[in-house]
Image (cartoon, rainbow, N blue to C red; front, side):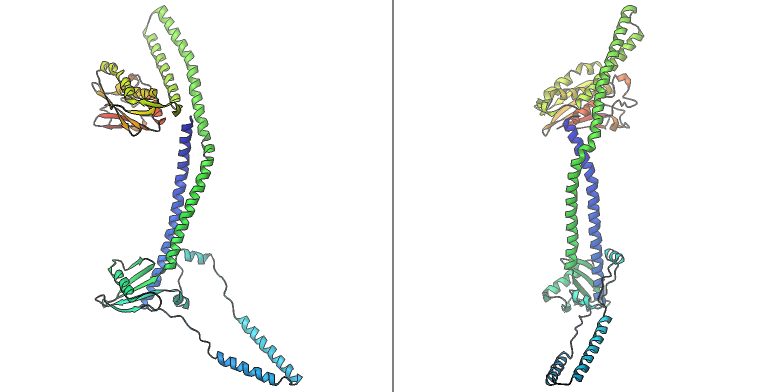
Length: 476
């Protein structure tokens, strides 16, 4: 496995690790925003319902006047003057006065003890009520009047404004109130939002209207704060997670790299070890033919030896195809490489009674290894000739695609309607009816072609239409 393959595997691991995590984080953030938005909307709707039920009027703030405060102050001043005049009173009167003050102080302390200071009784149940918007707000509380900013507009049956109530909001002119009311009536929904205002429309039985606008600046800002905070935290979490995943990705893919190296080592060692017994079998068979003459059995043995030798060569070819480095690539004339390689198969196609056509655009070039392009063309054309229908035709087409090339090799294949083409690039795979041993193939050529294409960050695909199968290769 070369450096480019390791980087590609590492990138794939990071993408597969980050994608589900990012989706889960976005899902959680979206759910938090939607819950907060629905709770705010529900609370605003309840407030508007309450105001409309009271025909646009809510309880005004209660004002507590301190009656008798001045008289109390005057009495205290008079008592002070009398005390100054009687400074020479007897000790008995002073003691009595002290006892009276002590009794008054004790009574005051008892009264203070009866007053209970407010406590924070916020608990989990209260929290859950707030989260899901099920807590009932005390609309009769004076706090509701202080914290609610709204205006109400009454309209007659002809949608003419008859009354405007703006005592709970400032900086609102009469034309603005009329415009907002007309806007709400034109909207097809009786409840909605415009800017920082939520509105609701009520139509009475006599045909008149009441439009109430509630200033929800705090609620709207709170909703957007939750949204922006969630997005920032998600972005920060994704970045931090990416750093950690990228840092530990090499260790995560280390077993795959080791397996690939073991596979490469196994193929190389097995190929080397198999060559010796095959050479011995070939030599013994040739010697037997020299002594006893050529027979049906010796011919069969020699065919199997040739077949095994070709299979070993292809296995080594797969291993080497995955190890090619880009540093050896140069600007290559793909038109020349494809034409020359395909022309060498013309006699083979003609001998089988098939027609080979080459349609390559002129001056098609890319940065690549010429031997790779020739090998890819050879594999695809050889496969097309082997599995083309009798008296059919093979077509090789080449064109420029960006900085890369597009190579298409097609042939007649009438029985390809119900074939599983996704398995064509599996090693040693043969489709039952057309891919059989009689064609002389190993079921490994397309796998080699796929490895060559992947080494150029390209892709190879197969399509079938109207009795013609086509292999499309894009090299980048």
